[in-house]
Image (tube, rainbow, N blue to C red):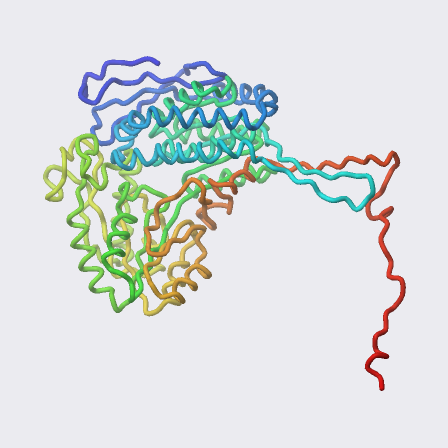
Length: 534
């Protein structure tokens, strides 16, 4: 690890001079890029290699060469290493959280939760090292035994997003390691620093050299090179969290190589509030779902669907509570609900959505672009001119067919849509091409039943936010939100293993199933009709 002076922002700490990690060694590249603090753009958090084709190919070869040894390491031993990772994450939890706050602008509370998610994932999968069960299957032949075994796939390519820079990577990396695969990981260009420290923790925990390899860089350059390596035959599995557009490209490349990818993509998540809802609970849940993390979650609420009988009251109270939100620099205050946009590209994309809403004819109920010293909410904390801060946005009089209701807006923006009944509410909720997360606020058992049964999203909450996940529950979506694969829990193990069927014939002769099977024939036709005759 190499540290540099941070002359323009000494109060934030030093600048990390980071490296790729290939075959256990810190590696340079020909070019570098910078990671900036989005709350204070003068703060250079780190500088990392902008990996080229040679770097990525070297990492792929290291992973390939390490596979056989790691695959043959007993699964309970691999599980123990996962347990070691958990212990080190616990010891470094506060440090990692502070890095996340500085690097991507999460609040400290959320950053702690993100690290805890990785800890929970490790604890769950540590014990799975003793439960990678196969089955014994009865044979139709005599003196013959049948078995099934889980086997690792090989080298896994992983690309992750920056909004959950340690939680989401852990969902992929930990089960992939546990099941005996080796990895080439490209972290988000927005969060390379916390990825570097996470990798150092994995090395310290006992992950052998070459089993986890990290190549840094932008999505446009290094990410594309990673995708190109699929066609070159380096990956037997690919896992991606990011935009739907890139996910479709990865899916196409994997398809022609007969690889099943894991794709966790965008969302336009509906939150329904019915006429019997507890409005206090619904409003608090809607505020968090819409504006928590600055709306920079794939599970953030995009469309709030309101029963017309409570619509007026909800809108008035929701607007009132939105105006009370504390926004600002999370490095200097633990009171803010959300901080800056993670990067300039997300910031610019978010600002462009104002024109989409206006063109659709939606009513801008609240929101005023970029937050500056001359254009800021009364309760802003810090200096808005130093970072990438934006107002929360509420669009009213929205129709589900509008572009603003159909496209993911990655940021603190939400639409209000009125409906007349539960059937219309569910139809509107299902009215986009996405299908990730969803929520309903109601105490009517039939509403709950219809919602659970008819919603097309992969995840559903009742009287809770659209956001949030637990390490032992499947996470993922359908349609433009993913390809029906799931992260987390026992279900993800299927994504990183293949089944092997084994039969052992002890008879000493060739036995042909279906042809030599000793099927039992009926002895005679039974006739009980005489019993009923007089």
